[in-house]
Length: 213
Length: 213
Image 1 (cartoon, helix red, strand yellow):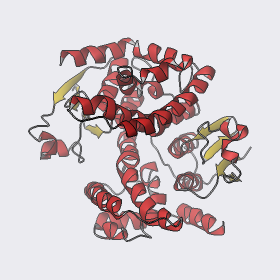
Image 2 (image 1 turned 90 degrees about the vertical axis):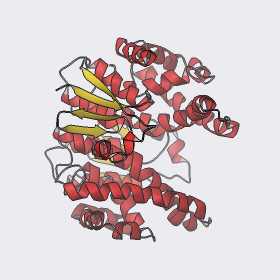
Image 3 (image 1 turned 90 degrees about the horizontal axis):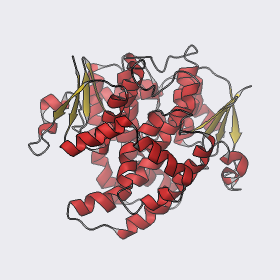
Image 4 (image 1 turned 135 degrees about the horizontal axis):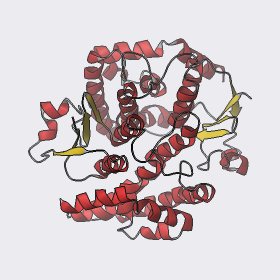
């Protein structure tokens, strides 16, 4: 039985899941969820994700939601396929740390900024300059820590590409389409890392999939 | 060499780490960080956590921060000690999911509410009733999902106590000291689960440790 990803509008969370699936070279079926028709609040979908949010995921009898729980599942259960994205035991310690850093340091500021700079204008709402002004230096400070880390290690978690890098891809790619790309450009190690991970064939497949929508 | 936990004021994040250490029956040394003297922003501490925040953790040459990365490390690397807190492969899928639910659904609302109801009054600041009014129903909705989950499963991740439950302990215990305990009391499965996990001997040791400070 092929894995299923339930998705609506190519959210950053869904793109994180697709990236892991392509890195692992796994077949999957995209199941569109009709948000306008309220399908995500209907019983059959709530049975997969009781919070009624996409993406959600099914692999046989395993039903999951939360993008980072789905990528962890894919990485651990399909450890022997495609790119190794996680490790076991002590080598996982630092990878696990940078997975948490993405979720609790990078993403909160980056997503607030993207909401103001990308999504609000798209939905005809005005960007709140004060929110941008508050969060831009916070994101810059996080990237300073990344610059130091990437001076010691080729990738964030270790010298190999792992989930810790992969989780950044959707938001990082979106940031590159805003004036905030200057924050990346100003940091040579971060900049080289961002170019490197965005050039991965698996990520190219995710972007190609998005362009076909 | 004994493990070290760098900590300042018994934060919820630090208590999460202590709970994992006591569940695993591991010896550790508490290293106080003098926040008032700015010790967390000095070079020797920034070498462990470049974000300059407590708690931070050392186990020989492994240096970590972010409480949930530390607990994952403890649970996986000391898998054979004390309480099993994680599993490998497919059985970990649902545990991993509920670890993410705690971090991205429960904690954001619970910590906003605790800031208003516990910490602001403690620091002589006024509670913002609008923030409470906005976040209380959001936390209630999360607890509705927990009530349904705990009707199918003894604990959140599976039928055994795991990190998915443990990560709730500090915030849950703090909520019990506020009028929001009514949200728990109104949900029998959530209420029984909260009583059960808070009664664990390892958690009792964390609270005893706090009371000795």
